Length: 491
Image 1 (cartoon, one colour):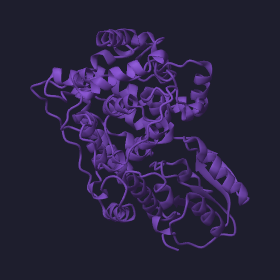
Image 2 (cartoon, helix red, strand yellow; image 1 turned 180 degrees about the horizontal axis):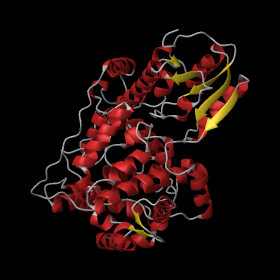
Image 3 (cartoon, rainbow, N blue to C red; image 1 turned 90 degrees about the horizontal axis):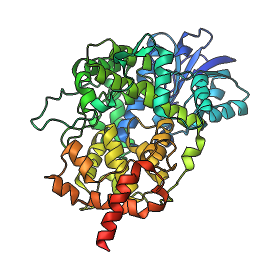
Image 4 (cartoon, rainbow, N blue to C red; image 1 turned 180 degrees about the vertical axis):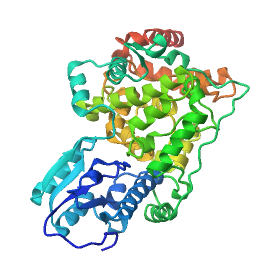
């Protein structure tokens, strides 16, 4: 059949399923001499479940094919369900299990909640024994992160981050944090200087025959999905991903800290690492990232700010997802707006769409990426101000971003971005008018233009519309007082 490896079928044997988001250079199954075959499933229907950005599909499929090719070059037997087989994940796995007489299936636990259960049910239906390995995408063992959240019913990211630093010894000087401060966030909120600053370009990975073939196939198979596969720009192997990381550490980490919250209309990447697409599918490991960032002479504020994202925020989101499954369904503000087609297609955008939203949306359609402040304070902010249903917003981020998966999007979008949990993940809604965006990105010709923008009007309308729910939030006291003053003046 198309896409399947060759080799004699065995009467019964152990096999390993290598999931798309676990393309490690050293997956523990590779070192198990008892595993005779390795399975890869490229599920074309799964990639059509949402209108996923074509770059996301290319990244996953090309990474899998490179891993499979490496294993075959090492003499291992690979069985593959290819896109052209047009099988669901379930049907693909069932074909592999039955056709190759599998008696035991090994796989690495997936951080997305339903995946392990689905694989286990398929195996049970086919009388296949199971062996589930610990999830290797994170620094913190599952039992440790679950234990911390069990002991902290009202968790705070800063507390989790301190625990991580103490537990691992990362950026620690004995029992004290390096530099005698846990957090240098106050130093990391600068806008870009008006005179400009040199921003090093990203590396330009060269596409090999495997990636070129995937690009052509994805463009042909998913013509209505966002993006153009021919513009694909990311590394797809562990070796190229490490090179990408090394370039960031050498050329951009130095200035990452001070400008990590900055925005610029014609600069989509600035000093960001853009390693999450590779980190979230195993092409890089947390250990590799931490080692690279902590062996440099970059300013401590930059190193700490970067490390906080990797071992603090990222692992906190994963723990929050594990500990609080209710986050998938919350809607504290009872928002029900529907995501319009232009959010996915980029076509027929409303003429009155604010310039920051239009600009960031255009770059998301181009790259499948925007950095964290643009996601939170431009896109997420606008979604919330406009009253879009949080589950719809979550699905949009899942579809459009190359690094988006349930375990990180659910707590980040439903909690932090859309305040759908009423303040559990984040203590206040991340909303603002044009003034903050102008300060960090100079989106409008002047501060007055920002003040008079539809973004600012939407901000005041949001506060007034949800005053009853937000009134008890002490972090919004000043903003609500200003809103009431404006309302009184209007009346």
